[in-house]
Length: 140
Length: 160
Image (cartoon, rainbow over all chains, first blue to last red; front, side, top):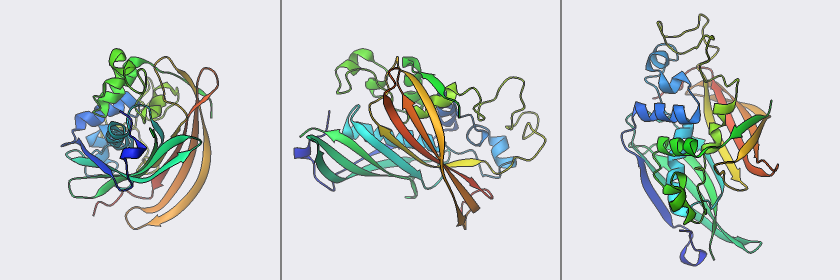
């Protein structure tokens, strides 16, 4: 499914719960798939006793991946032309995250239609963990 | 920085999609993926980061015969105190010229970008370092341009 410019308007939103009660095991699963084995994400002993954090925490890139799942479910497969995020707060085991995309512009460039979106992923306390933007190709 | 060869395999894409909890068949089911707008299996948008698997010197992967800074018998496997609380990821941006597919053999080159500093109440002096990474395919065509920003903090980020 690709979004259609004719059926889309600025201000339209799509949101999804992208993870509920994030487990340490999922963080380890992401470490294995991505190749980033930083102990800050995988090693509670190191992270609490040496690095000085209250527990391990998620890779920023795991939160980006979770946000990307919501985004591609909305804009369709293989249509993204840009996707960028800032990591604004850490994500911890036990967090539940909701990701939201908001259409900010619908435009045409060289005969191709595009939708610009802003992205925001928040935790169970309403704190934003990822702020971002994206552009996707859409149908007329 | 040396160029890294990143061979893209369907099983790796499947494992990566699983890790981000994405059950979309376009990432693991060739027959179903063929019927989508992507026309076949593609990689999730942030998969490019998994190039770390193919960097022989990647410092966040334990290597045989080398001391690892994570815990083992003690809370860290190295004698000296780590230089900082560890780098954190501040920003990541991707520009997709097309999407990565299984069978791609990507050549990945990273160049340093801007460096800047900022004072923060929650973590002391912050040093930001930008890295620009180009992913090119077997024909030399640009597939993804990535811009990452890492930050090193003076002390752990205060959670208050």
